[in-house]
Amino acid sequence: MIRLLFVILSTVLGRSTLTAQKYPRALFVGPQVKFYTRIRSRAIGSECGPAPPNLSYQTQLRAGSGPVPYIIDQATEKDIEQISEACINVFFRYTDNGIALPVQENVAKSISPLKYVQLMYLRLVQRQDLASRIRNTNIQNDMFVAREVIPYSSRSKSNHETEILTPTELEKITNLSALQLTPGDPIRLTRGEVLAFCEVTAKPFGMGPAADPSDAPNLGNDVLKRPVLSNLSVIPRAQKCGLGSTLLLSCENSVLSWTDPIQSEIILQVEQDNLTARSFYEKKGYAVAYADPSCRRFNTQGPWLRSVRTTKVTMKKKLNRTSNIPEKGIVEKFWESFVGALQ
Image (tube, rainbow, N blue to C red; front, side):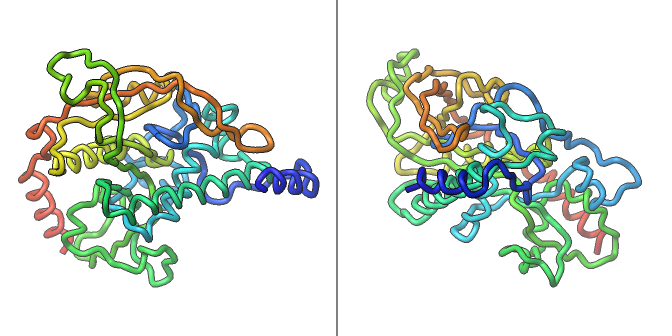
């Protein structure tokens, strides 16, 4: 049925293109267990460094520079549609034969009608996949979504933009200074666009022969339920703001809170030639366990989707129940002084 739809669209619309509508560009910075596109080590994200002087936050946002204020929450079912759109754009939209395009090409990138239909189908599958895990109370799963923090407006359109952030939620905001709030003015902020997403799920996963004899009970040939990290994705203008690292830590801390059974490790899969993602995880303490050449991924090149073979590297990290606990006190004192100054 899908192939027939592709043929009809190709015949009627020919080689016309549809202009990209929402996201300027996207980069895959983490693993995706079910949907994959091969993005190699060509960095295309904008720097999220110090904000340029004498520029408003809106100007910085349009220019794709400066830090992005964000807040991280546990995802709910009403977040699924926007999360799915962001993930599929990150994983599939802005690539050419599986390799991420440069920034200049992504900004002006158009997509063919067939590619547009492919992306619609992938978003639908992604929504169903995420919804099945959120609704299933019999599995251990935690999803974390990072949203941009924006000034509140009565004309806000997002599902979340009708809710003004509470004082407690204000303390969870990162890069709040980018909003250039004026001390003394009332703080009226709300959640905006989805910037990043990550999840961890307990699922049967075999690790092969244990390299370390002490790991044998947990990492041997038995297919046990293990925490599997997946879908870590950050849109380009929010990269290098610490979002990927923060979401990764959120998933790791979540696993440490699981009690049935108690978990002491977390694993993930990433394509073997995705050097950028592998380097990111290695810096976060993940080590390669083995490579699996029997994995598959979706390929969007051509008139219809194809499931093609690919080699994925399985990486694992032993979790330390003390080192993963964020330091308290300093952040709380900072927020008390900062919010006090604004009030």
